[in-house]
Image (cartoon, rainbow, N blue to C red):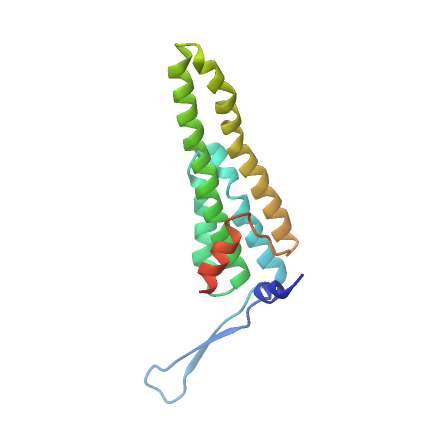
Length: 164
């Protein structure tokens, strides 16, 4: 890969020095994550989309929780979790709304027989969340193998926002 490898390197140990009135500071070390831990957390962030199949909404929770819990410990995990969150919000739910609108319009227009032309379009739009699910599983597998995964259209925007 190119210069993007710098982005996925594990973060160093974070040391926070406190002074509680005594002349000697207290050091609390918050260790960085191992590559295996980073890969596993990134995978779970992407696989959160599976919860949408059962609950409809809760698929956004795993990447959101992982992002806030690990954003200070691993840039790689934070980037992958934020990317999964944006991807799920935009593609999965946006496509579901479009499919619902298409089904409603098709149902209304079926009364006039012209709506039958809208049926294939509604069917195709229904397949978009399934495609998003498959794409998220590919992202989970890639991140589990610690390969920097970037969603189409979403990845560059999230990276610019995260690094900016």
